[in-house]
Picture (cartoon, rainbow, N blue to C red):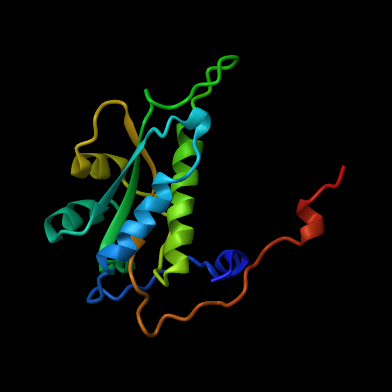
Length: 172
């Protein structure tokens, strides 16, 4: 698929076929896209957790209460280590959130290219997810996504509601 087609056709999917898992080679491709993502000062302060086993899925899915989320056969979580990320000297701003967002976006776009549905989720119960992942003290999660094939009755909008080009671009 052309890259601009990937960008224009990507939509948040909220309807997954629980019986159709994603092939390992496609999952590897998606995860590798995150590995290749840029990060501030090339620190790469992340690890990617792919919950696919029934035991881990039950624990992870407890962090978000939407029924469609519980149908996804895989949940991808981007975990960051705040001590490994780049910190800007003049204001001590830690760029962990930016780095994790870029990595997750790379994986979501790759999934779209492979015909895999995703939905960026930030509104999860942090304590439940952190306990399910047994995160260390300096680790954090800013987003996760289900991975799976949309149910056959899922229909995409086919268009994006976006501000106009002129509303968001200033030529200087």
